[in-house]
Amino acid sequence: MVTLATCFRTGFGEVTLSRHSRTNSRKEQNLRPWDAADELLLAHLAEQMPAPGKRFLIVNDQYGALTVALTTASPGYPIHFATDSFLSQQAARRNLAGNDLSDASISWHTSLDNIEGEMDYLLIKLPRSLALLEDQLYRYRQVCTPNTRVIAAGMVKYMPAGVFKLLEKILGHTQTSLAKKKARLIFCAPDLSDKTGTSPYPISYRLENTDYQIDNHANVFSRDSLDIGTRFFLANLPILEAHIEPGQAGEINIADLGCGNGIVGLMAAQRCPNAKIDFYDESFMALASAKSNFYRAFPDRSARFIIDDCMSSAAAGHYQVILCNPPFHQQNVVGDFVAQLMFRDAKKALRQGGELWVIGNRHLGYFNSLKRLFGNCLVVAANNKFAVLKASRHP
Ligand SMILES: C[S@@+](CC[C@H](N)C(=O)[O-])C[C@H]1O[C@@H](n2cnc3c(N)ncnc32)[C@H](O)[C@@H]1O
Image (cartoon, rainbow, N blue to C red; front, top):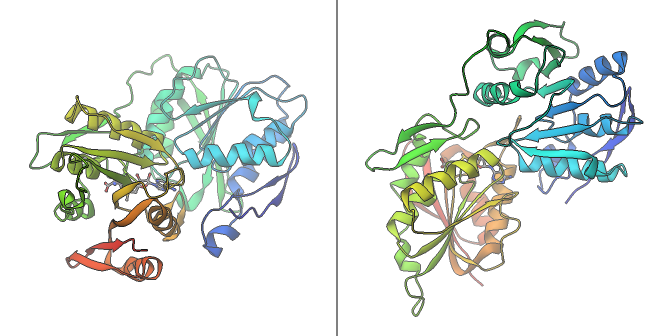
């Protein structure tokens, strides 16, 4: 892990922050673990200097910049931290530790937890996905009173259109500040007297050519319909029975890496009745969706749903087959660095002779990366947009 700690000066004190990068990507490692929207939001709060004891709910704080800064304040604030990202939760904990701050004073929540009590401040770093924001506003409306100060912050170029309308519709009167260093704050005064409605998520669709109903929480990849890349992957899955070793009673260990709603693992389970499937993702909503979809389809089978950074926690040499449709970005940073990390973790987790199957856009260059890492790579299937690749682990 690369820990490039950078000094972050705020109105609440000076802290050091790191991205705690596991990737080999210099581009990713060198990015700052905060942005101008964090600076703007903290400067605004420091001007007001909330009284000690004011309760904060901080949402989508990617590396914990807001949480760490507000925790340095003395005598401090009760803070609730909510995120859909396991990586963000880990980064915030590590950055607290890096500043000798205890994480025991923070209440940690996943994106699916019910948060109770009334908050004085609801701070939202705007996610790229309007669906996730919509779900969060409905979910966190219950901690708002007319006195709660709701402040949403984001970089103008990443702000999804419709943020303003959504805040108005779900919470109340909304106004924006002028943009500074390409960041903007949006202020909302909750008035819940005439607000009705609930989050439309999770939403469902039926997986084509099957009877499987697929649930999708708000932050799940391709939540409205089957992604065209995933469709191509499903049409070209490996013949899993070929990997069953003699004397194994038909058992085979398979991982769905970056599972999203779990469709890929689900179809592997359908084809291989004795397969043991492990689903990995860093999104709490993805894993919850995968779990609900798997148990609805196979109420009598069991599977594991593992929150992880790629598959860093997997036992070495455990899997015969790993299936992976990698992400092409991590939050706002676009690139193949997560895919590369997934390939490295997958290689360790495969048995000798085990195979990693990957679907990717043809232009992404996964073929060369896999060939370099495994010493072999085969194009199993390709169309004008996607390729399904296979790399085998040999001694
Ligand atoms: C392109 S989607 C594929 C989803 C699903 N397998 C499919 O084919 O429809 C990539 C998935 O990788 C997950 N992901 C992103 N970064 C990750 C990481 N560092 N560790 C584990 N999963 C990650 C995302 O949350 C997302 O669900």
